[in-house]
Length: 55
Length: 242
Figure 1 (cartoon, rainbow over the protein chains, first blue to last red):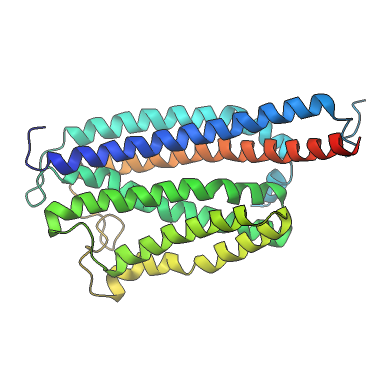
Figure 2 (cartoon, rainbow over the protein chains, first blue to last red):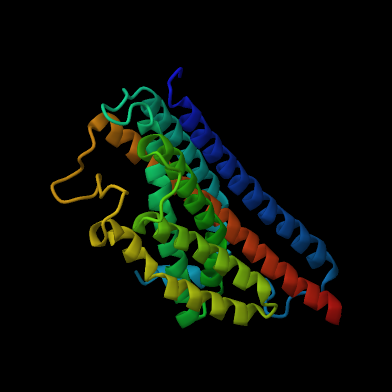
């Protein structure tokens, strides 16, 4: 895109890519981190009294 | 709409649904973004804007999403405040960083379009200023939630802030009609139909649907993370007291 406006167009797409990559990366890492933490703790913790035992 | 609160009140059902729905929305977003970008990069230069019209294909969806996500945040906050749904509060908390991301994109891409078209990156015009206020509302919501240790107080304070901030949405939408602004008026959703030519209309619509699907996917992923975090906190308490 050899255009006089390329200096503005490409940075706009670059910023969009960076923001989306950050949102995806942070969302996935947040979810995975807490899932792992819960699994670690639930192995040590006594059974949740709020949950009914399976029949 | 009675299914919505029933669905929100059951975290197990939500976790089962979101496990397959999040990747599905992600795949849909990738396909729509691919189609939208392909059409956008094959669109001819606009007679006035030249090739900077390509910035509009990502600016307009980001601007719409910044407001749509805030409406979702406010709706979830309302449900959390009135019905005390734990998942609704998790949904509100999960939406804020995503909304901040879309609002930042709208401001940066708009600024990069404004420099060659208006001759400036920024003006204190009613539309730009009200969108900046929206970004500050998202940041304030995130900061407020992070500042309070008591989860219930943080949820209530955040919900009140989110609901007060709703007043900014009509201000953003009607700012171009109520004040004399440099920012142009509505060109897609307006009386008499869109004024965009189809070669510009379809990339905007496809990328809006892509952004919306991406939001759907990331929102579900973040709500799942919040559910895991709250379960981990409860398990940590059980470990501490055992």
